[in-house]
Image 1 (cartoon, protein in one colour):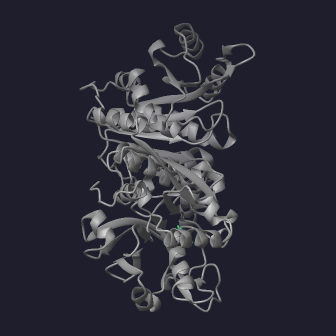
Image 2: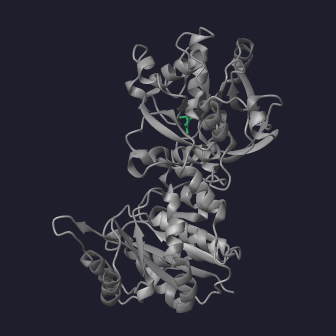
Image 3: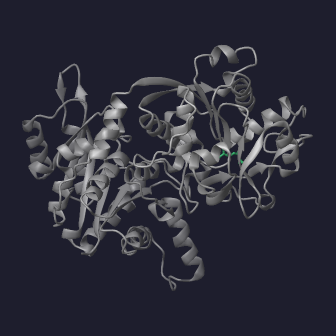
Length: 539
Ligand code: GLN
């Protein structure tokens, strides 16, 4: 069977959840035995989101191969439990960069280089690159932005050409729109959807399926009206009601038969209907928890939920494994002082200090960690969170006054966190950190070893600074141990305080690898410690 391609576009407004719909459809197809991958095309000019502030598009998600990508890839992995790679996220900036590099090399043989055909060809190449691997029965390509945006035009044109070139039976378009509810009229309104489909049609694309986001159920009449005015098959008007959690959406799409409509349209065998038993089991545990626990998430981008998306989701997975719901209390690190920390953190059963960059909010993180260390509150530090626990220990236990990371204070007398050697000569900001998967050797008998149950692990990274090994002996003598190291370089990956009930800082980002099928053991055990149970859970 040749690879089938599904494009997902969005209309009316952004933030309708194209990523979740794509991931849900992929899940349903995967459950029917098809291998599926999802790709996101982002119409902005940054080459990747790595240089973006989290306030712009939320968290930057990192893949095993070290790509800094859109957070939707996190949803794809969490739903499908299959790793993604650089090929799964492409931006306009990357496409232009490739085309301009080719032009400079003379690859276009003297031709004028233009949006059509050169940019559109490159867009199509990015899609077929995944299809041509031969690994996937279906490639789902989500196009960022909203139909009608100037910057989306080359993508829509590329989809139009793609359908012609690969054949109608192999390529389909799903358009996601909003059916707003006008409270004053007491009615759901289909007009914006009709307009959005007309815009798509004027660009040469007739969508095959409409997924309609709505707060209220769509009546059969409304569905028929949408089908009639948008030239869509009745069965292909899919209702997507606001859901309690994103994890409800695959089951909702199953009830709406989205997968069946897609398979029929692409002339694919229906195979066995997905039962999604383990998914249902996950949702039942999530919705009927035995208890709630409060975990403080200390960061400086806490105003924006999406800034720590993978951490939030990893805590959801870990909660389900422990049959509890983790109520994540966002604490702005800039608000914390020595005087108010006790009051701010008094109800927290665990503290997680988030990754981050730059000086702002750093001192508050250190104050929170001191509180966790001195009051035996389970502590979990990720990346900058780990670096902060090192700084805190240096200042308050080793009495190294003004100890700091070189990132925050280049002239600190005690650079307990220093810039990595290979980073010293780097001047470009984009794509130059220590990125992606590296192995870590875990010390036998440590908390990390208990948790992972293995001595060799692989986790994803995104950092420029590292623990300064010159201080290692002093730290270990005082009670903070390096229990995980990169076997090739000796770079410290894990710090623990064995005397503390649960105190662990990791230089890597475990949150990127937590999925519904495989909740991350560090999160699972952190939550277990927060509940107050000491025994280690095998995830
Ligand atoms: N800013 C720190 C570094 O570059 C930590 C990075 C992070 O938390 N992702 O090393």
